[in-house]
Amino acid sequence: MDETAALARFAAELPASSIPKDVRHASSRCLLDYLGIGIAAHSEPAVRIATEVARIGGGKPQASLLGGGRISLVEAATVNGVAAHVLDFDDTHEPTILHGTTPVMSAALAAAEWVGASGVDLLAAHAVGFDVAARVALAVNPEHYDQGFHVTGTAGAIGAAAAAGRLLRLDAEQMAHALSTAAAQAAGLREMFGSMTKSLHAGKAAANGLYSALLAQRGWISAPAGLEGRRGYWAVLSSRSDPTIATVALGEDWELRRNGLKPYACGVVSHPTIDAVIGLARVSGLPSNQVAEIRARVNPYVLELMGKREPCSGLEGKFSIFHCAAIGYVDGSARVRQFSAAAVLRPEVVALRRLVRIETDAGLPTSSAAVELVAADGRCWHEYVAAASGTPGNPLTDEQVLAKYIDLVEDVLPRASARRLAELALGIEEVSDVREITERFQVTASL
Image (cartoon, rainbow, N blue to C red):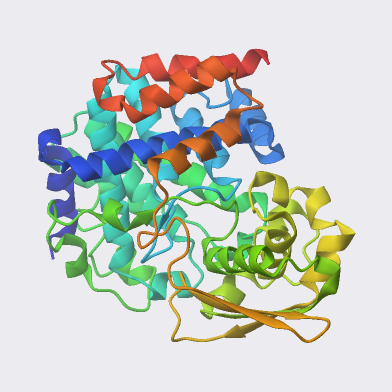
């Protein structure tokens, strides 16, 4: 019954040198991925609105926005969290479907810039904060998510508090108060998927975690068992929980090893189907107007999360397995361009998605799919994807992560600036002051 305290000690006291090399490398890949997504999203309506509202409150320019400019510390975490999640292109912890880097890194980056932390400090804060968020999520997985909570907004806030608190040099007692305070602010509802509010879950998780750490730094006192208490996070927000899961092999088994970086800008459970239809289009050479049917057998979560049959906007398209399958077949890709309002309404895509049939199979993991392509003349092709691209079982290479980043920022940053930012992110352990990175976001403000 001391999980809050145990996680707090881990977050506050683990030496950065104790984090394994492969976990540190995974963290640097997450940073590069985060920067590309957040910078690319700077002109999204949700980001623009969130930025406008943030500026209404004024405050000191303490931290940088991924899209350029500086605002107050907590507001920067909010806006950057919205930006890094609104494209639905951010990383995914496979067991829980937690998008952990967005809230954790948004809080950590603002705190690191404010205190002038080193790259090593930022990397350690992310790795630790991600681990805390994922472990909090695992203790109530899958019931918490099944009840309708968006785990990125809930567990993400607690991971953000751990990351920010570490950068603010909280001791273990202060960190426990920060985690407990963040647990009291955990929120996010899956009903909001397909709308701007989904990205706000990540933004508020980052802000609430950072705010909780700032409060704790100044002597704020919270309940000692904010997570495991009878009316704490786990008990109230899930029909079942096992708090002991949160501390098993803590500091030894790292949840970043079960994290994946997305190749497609949409709900992660659609990715194996997209992989399959891209492969079928290539192998068959069949034009979309000669397709009679696309039949996909998938995990039940796919229809639950992505069952929008006739999406009307790009955001809705990200949560339509029908659109994802159709656009993947037609374009051979499912990146940001495939989820614009125009892409969702393309006649060729609309016609094809109405030929997509989905069958659920509880025996399939969320990272797998079996897809059959049927031609109008009766010919058939089959494709089975055991582990979708980007998942821990089929990870993107460093070169693919870099290519994704370049594709995202090429229309926003000058080529030389984009390359230098990538070098700094992947070599973050050599950066003495994180502000060397954040000052490079400003170029987007003048474009």
